[in-house]
Length: 276
Figure 1 (cartoon, rainbow, N blue to C red):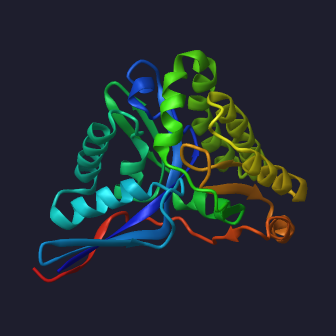
Figure 2 (cartoon, rainbow, N blue to C red; figure 1 turned 120 degrees about the horizontal axis):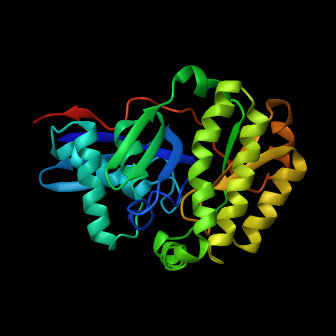
């Protein structure tokens, strides 16, 4: 029996610019990290079982975490090599309708500024010293509105050429986010997320829904600085940047949602148990 554990991930800025259709011709970048909520894969007597700490279709890369976890259980390859294999498998499986950040963040773990180009991925790890204070400003909620990337991503990719300026701006935001972390300006970091969300909503009419728009407005009115829906859009989990002193107000405003506390984690995919 072999059991692997692989973290979910949160992408804060730049999501969408990690698709090959974009970064093979333009610069792409994201800022995000893996969190202490996991997908477990068990291989036993030729059978595969898996379960997760969080729901699927959540925008937290559950499918990529499963693929990475399965490869971890089957392979002694390095985390970076597993990320590459998982990316190739998922791109081939979906016909290119998957980004390249999920497999890397789930496999390697930690918080990263990733840059994408025709030459591959450039990884700029962000230190725990910069990330730990940010954690205290982040609030993660399950909207209980679920979707499949296949319902949202095709329309975004189809319309990508019509939104070139938005994607270019989104690719700049990860570096600006790093600067705000270095300055310890978390309000400004939240404003970047708000701008990112407003741009993302322009990419396709399937990114948001009336219910999601109401949730976002309630959080902002209760004191959140900014936030965004995670993943491709249409549902799943939503994250907000909120000053610690205002978080109870936001929780009260979103009391019909499930608040999910989390921390960033730095181990990535690993084998928990092996009886070979």
